[in-house]
Every structure is written in structure tokens, then in C-alpha cells.
Length: 228
Image 1 (cartoon, one colour):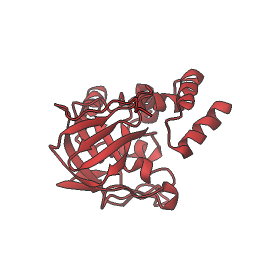
Image 2: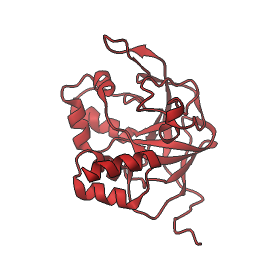
Image 3: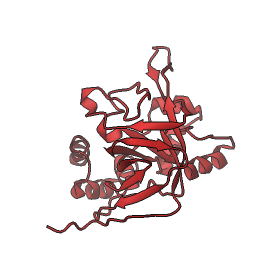
Image 4: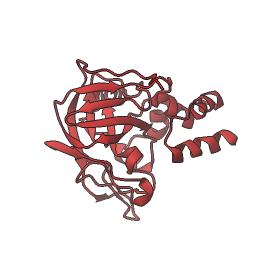
């Protein structure tokens, strides 16, 4: 059977500005731990950490995941955020947001991560990453940002960055090009999946569910939302 996706061998422009790793810290009176306050490092070693159900580990060596129920695992192995989104929020909030401010492992430039189709693959350094799921904002993110109404504002903006699977393990460094090597044909973007879960309403949710492009555990969650 012919593959109806699009494969490309080269691209120009998009690149990685910063690669970032988080160390454990306590963030609330119950001493829940988080790695959201990431710091730039020289490079990332990325690999498939295995299913979230087996431990919720990060796909980035040395990166700490505090909430193993909702973060980490194969489908959320690496988190990417566009510098352009940080710039947007700098203007909105009137404060500096350096790379890694959203707890991302990779801060990118020149690529529309939220407009990427789910399943798009990029060669980055010696690794291959695949766009999988949007980031759903949580209490830890609200604590880290310390902005009144942050979860509501972030959600309404609708551009949350993308988690990525690690299709081929490797090393990613600041300055590496981001080269699209595969683009599926289904038309469902990372932003569509975010909207289906948050503000988009039943029509968007139905379109995402019908496409069947989500990892199986998340597909079941979205199907359950649609039934409600």
C-alpha cells in the first residue's frame, strides 16, 4: 500500500536555540517535587523512556519528572516550545522570559510547533523526534509562572507547544537544525488536539477522535470526553 504522507530530505531555517534539563525541587507545602525550572545545558541525550505506565520517566537523560502520573513516558518524552511563543508572552506579561521558562527541554526558533500535524517527524541533531501531544497546563505550571489567572490565559491562547516521542535516540545541541523528514496527511495539528481537550467544543473533539491519530491511551480518553 502506498504511503500517503509526505517525506522530505532537507529544510532550511528552523533550529534549536536552547536545550534544557530540570533538577528536582519541592514546590508546595506537601513537598511535591518538580523539574519544571529547567536550565540550559550543553546537549541532551534523548531516548524512548518506555510507557508512562511503567514509571513516567523523561526521554532526556538527567531530566527530572515529578508528576509521573501525567508527565513523562514514550508519548511525552521531550517537550518543545517555540521561542516565538515566549516572545509573545513577554509582550503580554511585560517581563522577561528566558529560554526554558515554560519548562521545555528544547526551545526552538523558526518552526510552528503548534501547527505541526500530529505524527510529523523531525531530525534534530542525531535524533529523530515525532510530534505527539500538546502540553495541558497544570497547577505546577501555574506555580512556576506566578501570574494571576495564568492557566486560563494560557489555555485561551491555544498554543502550548508539543511533546515529542523519540523515534531514533541521539544527541541534540543548541544550534542544531530541525529538519522535517515526514509529514502525515490527516490534517490534525497539535493545536487541534489542545483545542479538542480545552476550548474548541464538540465539533473539534469529534474531528480529532474520528481521525484516530492519538496514542491509544489518549485516544480512549478523548473518546470518553466525546461520549459525555
